[in-house]
Length: 173
Image 1 (tube, rainbow, N blue to C red):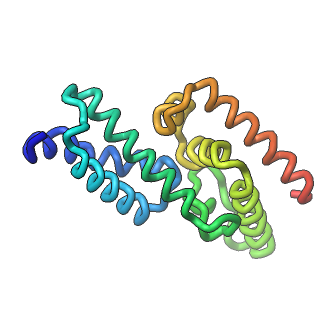
Image 2: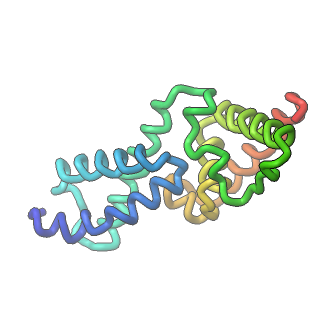
């Protein structure tokens, strides 16, 4: 593959790759790093990239997915600061009004506990829950990002949510 072909087929996917990394629950700075690392690896192995545009796109997304999963695995476990997207940035959850400091403190404390409990889940369940809950991905998008079947993703989400509910009950949350 020539440099020109690489620019057309691979570098044109850079923004899409960044968006996918963010949806996988990777913080913005780390997402940019993951995309860059994936692009460097793709450049090194550019002769292995398929010639068909659709296949090359999937190949690039698989390389990014692998890089993101490696990044997630390298993080130190069970620390609220090490989780993908801080729960405060999750779009679907409404925070209590700022004028009630007691509620705000309780809310933030509960969110930190939930984030730590998510970190204790097995990697597949943890990744699926983060992508679904915080990244807003549906099962088919999670399946594509992780290279698993939709049924497997559905099962990971179900088991992860069930385990999370159990952990919440055990911890009295």
